[in-house]
Image 1 (cartoon, rainbow, N blue to C red):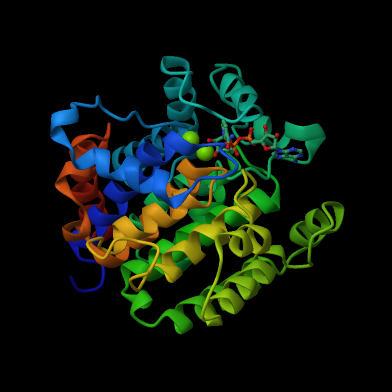
Image 2 (cartoon, helix red, strand yellow):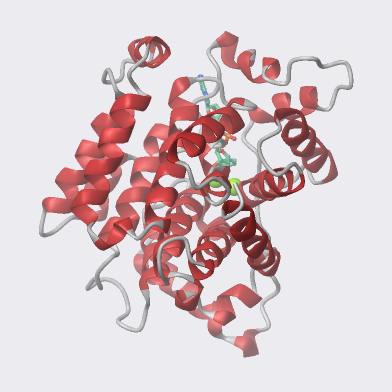
Length: 345
Ligand code: 8NA
Ligand code: MG
Ligand code: MG
């Protein structure tokens, strides 16, 4: 479809759910042979197996709150979004939330709370979380606001409800930017896509908070920009091993060690790869490759799939995968509503 077509919206939101559900199988695994990944993915097509539904985790649970909040409030409302996060957590606490963020979600449910950003600021002795929990739910911001400045601003604020460290919320901004650009068709020109992300993040990371956090955590002055340069270097290489991707970009629960990784997965899988079945389309390749990196597989696959889904559209997603993932059909319906909101805001 053309820029910002309904197919791209559906592709982004549905693929994100699939990445989360399918990726849950390998979450936290240190090494994941591609053979195991393909076996797992093939079992999704095998209806005779009657394997039950794959449940979604915190990634999708929180993204659903973001979507419902943006839709009902026709825009960003921090009180409403915070309330939804808290309510969702108390209804289903067993979705695999990070150890730290649970404290925030409990505090957010207090009726006495006046500043909904305060619990997040209190995390980790006042330093805030740098986990990827803000980034994993950032795609809906790109699917609600057509204006780039709005995408950045609201992805930032939406992440700040749980992640007040710049290395956390800037990961959310980067993820939303990647989905935004992909929705416009920017992945047709991969080199320009990565350059554009670097240019945008140069501006996003040009401030005192980022410099301070980076210094304390002993990272480069503009941590996400530095990682995006590494992504570009890996793109330029003719052969890249899984080990190299992990050591250069990471596969962990920090936003810095997973958002650039997810972006690389998308870029690397734009073309068919020898390690992946020729029958796979782009979304399948992206998810399979993300899982083979191990580590925080559900979240990396979720983020990569959102970007890839916005590029390839809903037609690239196998029906059989949709059928066995909890929440995938809901995501498809919500994508239609977000598409309307986007063309209205
Ligand atoms: P979070 O905010 O609790 O952060 C996750 C973890 O990162 C924390 O528990 C800490 O260990 C560490 N961390 C974050 N910020 C700091 C800091 N400033 N100083 C020291 N340590 C810090 O949760 P989140 O929402 O960011 O979640 C991140 C990921 O963890 C998600 O992918 C989610 O699925 C979850 N998770 C991951 C695994 C796994 O990969 N093995 C297992 C269960 C849950
Ligand atoms: Mg998860
Ligand atoms: Mg995870």
